[in-house]
Image 1: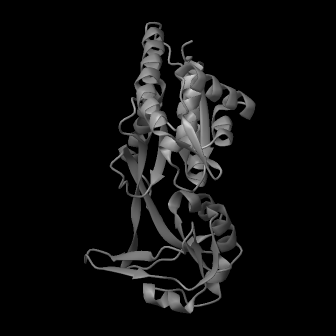
Image 2 (image 1 turned 90 degrees about the vertical axis):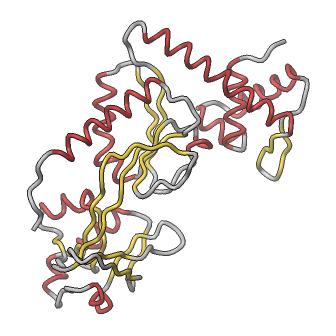
Image 3 (image 1 turned 180 degrees about the horizontal axis):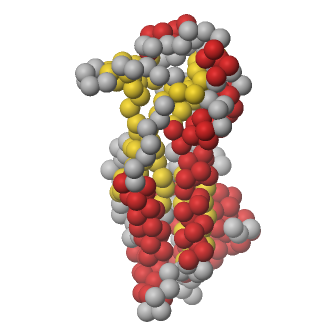
Length: 308
């Protein structure tokens, strides 16, 4: 009795997610199916592949060896399918991708939808979450990350910069003297993003002087919801730091305005598409990556009117 491809795929997913339930969700299978495939694989290999540690399944030594052996086998199967389909010039397959929630909805999703319309054989699983996902554990082919990439296990391709500014509602701005220096923010209500561990400092740079200043704002509101920050600022609750792509619509509608500090600016953060460095990229994922980078290259080279 030999292991099947389905058993190996399931086994790899359980190792990477740490449990049957998580693997079942990732694979859109019943837990009973995942459990049976694991039992059948252990029977075929005549060895125990896991130890149960709390709620997690910990691979045995034999399980770790089997995992390392299974990866090139599954990559070879993927390559066989892709090479065969390449002869038809069709891009097919499943792409798992992750992105920050608001950026994914506002900037990434339209590109992905157009890509899917052009390539009818593509299925995309797009997960939008502001938390940094584990690409390996989540089985992701690609992800968008706003901020520096400091993990050597990840390859990345820059697609742009996310500029940020301070924003407030016209009602809030008319009710008090607005800050012209970062230190003036001590006299204001601030609304801050908190993704866990407390709000990150607001970092400022002087225009043309190369100086920097970091401020931990005194907050009236902290939230892990970017859209909630926009709504709170529109409601006049205070000043908030937002990437331009989140604030643009509200500014155009007259609901928010830029808090202008002529001698100071907020540095933008890099936007990168990332993927596991050691994992062979699927042909479908490579095609989507090229589409995304091509469109953002066009956007970055297009002239933009100055913000006022």
